[in-house]
Length: 308
Image (cartoon, rainbow, N blue to C red; front, top):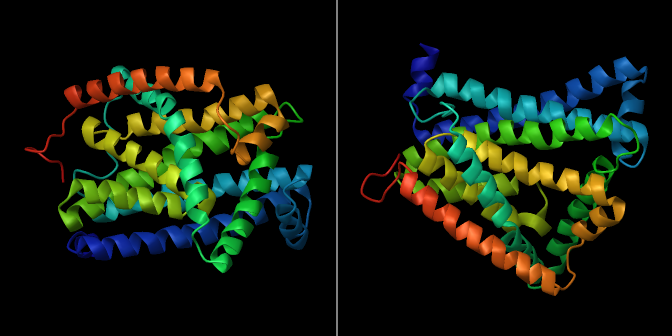
């Protein structure tokens, strides 16, 4: 009876209910992460909260990694699975057979999109100049906190940190966030609006907004839209998961190879392009055009046969 009630609910109501599940998951994840890890490490909960607020320390790094992992599992992965069971429908959590050509194409597109991501970062920074000062100050505070946590997670002083970061910061978000945003939110908005483009871009907007990093809002939304269209054309979440993982994992590997200086430069990416960057962008453009053509010619979606 309960499942029937959720299935008969309007898609907008289902969407609101799913957001409530996500918020509940965030609260559960933060609480369980702090309690579980404080018990394992012999700290009080108050000490655990203090360590989690100090991202630069070793214990702070451990707490932030663990809480990040709990957040992915409970807020996005578990709640997406619960929503798919409650709402049902053929479009939820499209985890069919993995297609190797689609995985290759999605990774190629993720790599080819990097110059576009860099450009949108710059456009994002320019747009902030037109925002009210109070709004920019708030955005800067959130960005500073996020940058501190990111820099801490990408500092590899001990052998365990790189594989742990690869799993928690690259693999888990790739799977759990795609389950939530492209596996639940995107099909819900498609059912609500009967417009696949509105679904892709609204899911991408929410995907960017929930990160609370306004300096990267536009590039993250563009990335989210690209992931959304990969799901639409392929009919599966796996290509989007692969592209999402590659995007995150590439930054982690680069941080390991080039160290804190590279991380600092990336977090404040305003340097001018050199000739090599233009050459790389030209190669990326060629690969991107070819990959987009392949996706369009091999995809399920067309304007005359839309997927809802």
